[in-house]
Image (cartoon, rainbow, N blue to C red; front, side, top):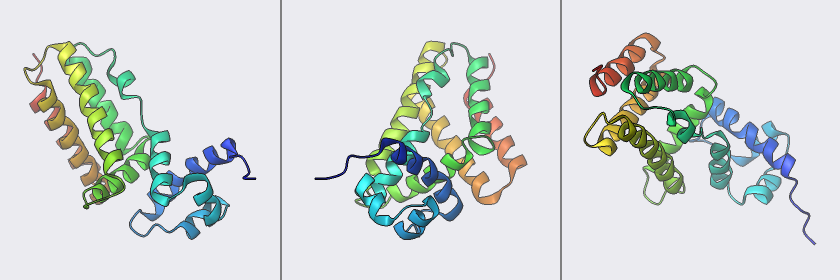
Length: 187
């Protein structure tokens, strides 16, 4: 008879995966070194998660911010601009930086044909665009909220990726502010 899943152990494993991948990268991810770093075996990781791709997807799901809550009270351009800048800062230098570093790797891997990460990447992008578009709609700022949300999400993601790769905080910070100012000018 199979042993029941230890949900606490499973949660502990998920908590360590994102930090490990942020430090070591996704491209060369192997279960044995990951398991050793997490204090378990590759066999146990497969027992809990079936595949390393599913392990990563579930680990990222624990890190996903509640985007509905991030934008829920946004009804005016000033608040939306501030929220986007705060979100940019949090995701580049704050508590979410490791999660974002891993998410960028997963989004890149999702571009490959038949990638096991395509569904996760599609859902992550669609959720962000939908919640930002809802805030834009509530604010009455633009005539095509989905397109403007796509521009902001994709543009900011590119700028975050630039910062992760180059480490240039000053230039990328100016670029993020310039993008937000251009797309959401003060009225």
